[in-house]
Image (cartoon, rainbow, N blue to C red):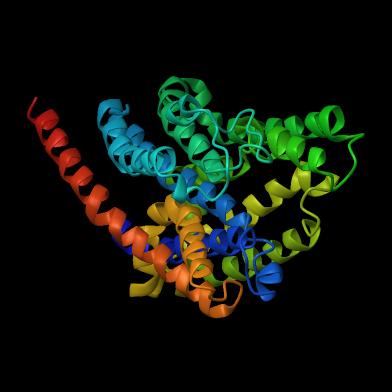
Length: 373
């Protein structure tokens, strides 16, 4: 049987890939070498990969609890999630709201939206685009809040036997929500105009109810791996084949989503990308896959730093390019790109020692006190 520590190596490769995709995509918003436009075009799917990974890993932990003990220890779960997610996030908010130099753009959403993790609703990215990438953190935090409650409600009942079908229904509802938004809010707007992009992001790309595909696929494969022995055996047997299928399907998804904000990709493109990454995640946990067997210090470190890098990268790139400008140095070449990426990684390391490690120690002490009780 596969143990968690072994499986993590395969998933580390994917987490590292996800943060690289996001960096390449967001770097296009700054001065950049021309090749970034083509290489980073589909970098938006890095967030979808993060969603699939989160859905799979978090639901997998909760499925183990419900399978072994018949319930979920909510207090333990929320303590772990809080000290993993919130302290680095609050540090980033502090930087954005107290140091204007850190802001990659002019205007921020109201502080209360960031603090309540509701910024992804009504987010006007055209006029309030600073720290806009926190939208995905809002969705993840809402996911962490409601998933254990949902499973505690469903799993002890007969509906628990049909959880896989319920998850598929939720994904279909998300597709239908995008279909409704396309026909009620997007149709009639001039394609490519500022208003089109403002509404498209606000109504289709950012809201939680329209972006449940990745999390749903992650939960679905986590459920099948934990509760279906034949499914798990086939995953372990055909890991490299799954990887090939996933990559091919991802290529098809990229081809279909070439114009990301057109009708087809806006309605079902996110689902296709999520399914593709779901198959690749299965390959990464398969005992026969080279992704599972291979270990890499680089991807392991990138995976560990990915959350901190995600939080801070726009502010860091902005500051580095501003300083290069101040000294009349080139900001759109490969040297500037490499320098910005190195400082993004350095920022992640700084987060690790300044906030993540102290938070982890506090978390461990709280869990020890809880277990004594």
